[in-house]
Length: 349
Image (cartoon, rainbow, N blue to C red; front, side, top):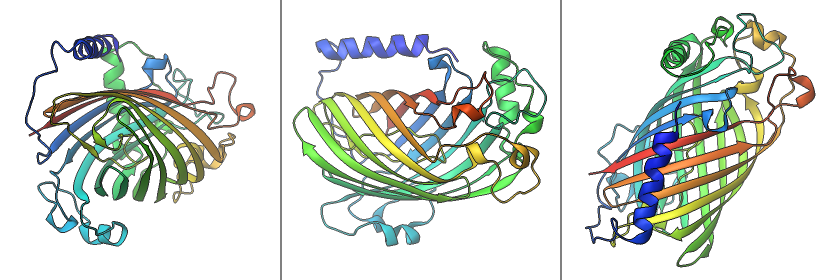
């Protein structure tokens, strides 16, 4: 994947907005508009091609509503279950959303068609999720569910091979050894609270959790924003299946918001198909025979550049983890860390 053009465009927009020559016009608030979002994620930004390697997500987020019952305009399902987890209070904003996407991972050695047991498995996931949030400028609560599939039915093999035919990269030859088909069901929860609110800086504590046969975890995070801020909370661009997709930024009436987000979080893992293999399928060769040792705790850092107009937004994120697998259990060619970058485009109308 080539990042030069997107980076150049973002740099130009940030420069012009910074000097006020393009983005200083007054525009009407579009807080009551729905948001379409598309994300492209890849690890090529770090010159890497192992563990998480590629993903995309298409999302639609509803207009703001004063109650959960009044959200609508999307194909999200599960509102009755969301009522159990979301607060019902005056002054909160409510949104619902759906997401459809795919992500995939590969081992470092993609030139071998043989089963690689001392590195992470070939894995693809195709999924649909629905999410619901309640928030203001001090607090956010979110709940979502996801249904999907891993294995050949995810179509990851065909997508990666097609991408590698038109972009530089090693032709992945080991997809015949990917994890077997297995349905995925996830329940995802998040809760955030501001601990500092200022004109150009804020900070929040967050708890995120997932209960799933794909990845079950609990994590604590610190989320900070610096710049010309909108109200609300920063968006953390997790690949689909890893976290909640939400839109909790309220557009500024005065035109442009430009800010940088810093996120640091620590995750305790109980189930991790990405490094443990199939959860309910017992005869998959990689799952039965692999020799890697997953880490039970992983720290992760994000840097996100955000440029928001009432009608659209552009975001670019970079993320990196500590070791996800014990180094001594990996092939000498393997990389025990995981990293990537995401480009996000949003339109509101």
